[in-house]
Length: 271
Image (cartoon, rainbow, N blue to C red):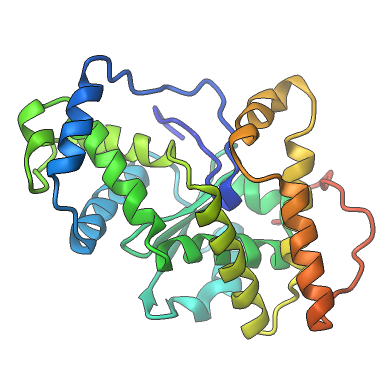
């Protein structure tokens, strides 16, 4: 992604390479004060999410309608543009980073490199998880935090009790901060449950959630290129444990089918 922090929000993992952090400095106190004063509504979260996603869409290569990535994503999720009371829109960013995220306005963005390593069932589980964060309003909390970090550059805007209009630079910083956000372990667990229920209700293979976690675990293990991924995993639920939780529930539901040894593919799964 261009001039932005890259974070793997999918399933609560983070993969950061040459990340550009926002240096708040003395503005941290302003953020704290602003957080107490700000009245942040669902409508605010939706508006700011749309501004952030519009910014990201303009600053990243988006797969066109005839691109194999778009065709695959539409095939998988075309029927879920209206899901559980949410109106969703999907796009693919053609970048090397492994990522997927969803926003309060219903925007879902999937990175091509994620699609290269995930099977259809695994992608269904991952995006189902992200939809869960939106449905559970976790993304509202993340957007509020991102807004405060961006608005903290202007003390008056941050300390206001209402959401202020951000300039282009602040919108970029807000988008950056949103991608750099992480959810609590409770939020991740609830999104895991939503993903499993989404898979089960739509008669998808729930084992895809298990193998997706196993692949994330493999990405977090060893290797210089993966050290950032591994480091950031320390603050998130263990992927292997979450995989086992999926297995336990699938066994209880009579839906478990042993996938065998899970490995990372050596060739792209999107062609």
